[in-house]
Length: 182
Image 1 (cartoon, rainbow, N blue to C red):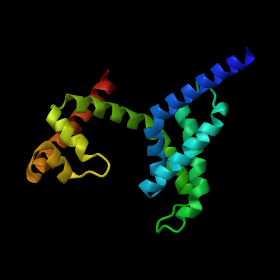
Image 2: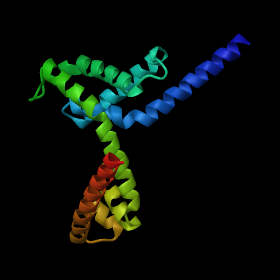
Image 3: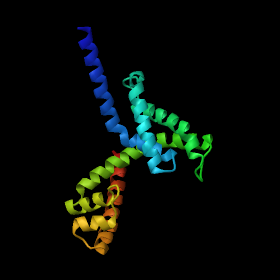
Image 4: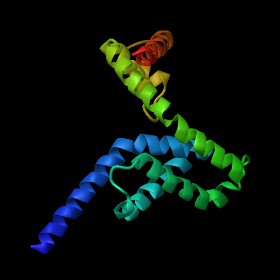
């Protein structure tokens, strides 16, 4: 009986871990990407951070800020990897790195609001325009590939993207302004 109870507890803990990791992966990556000079390095550090999060999840206190806890782990992964980045042309000292990390955590709420507003604004776009924007910003894609996928010429795609970006910028601004007023 005790074994089943333990198994259910482990299963529930693993389920909670997967839910939190999935829900906050983008935020953790964004935090890492502010601290390291290269996207691929940030992706590697994200994988390392995820492993440590999995290993240490039993230490996570429920009902506390998971993202702050995960970003603290990410911070230590970055610190451990600093020698690798020391060969880079631009290396920040620990004081600058700590200031950037602190600012990234402080801006997290604002960034989350902007992502939510952008998601809502994307939903308001005409399906063809939304598909153009999403295909343009897919990893490994570009304007040329997005134009082909949407059946537009390259010139038409550039014009459409310019118009859509302006619409999205205005929409996000309006959305955020309306949240402040509410």
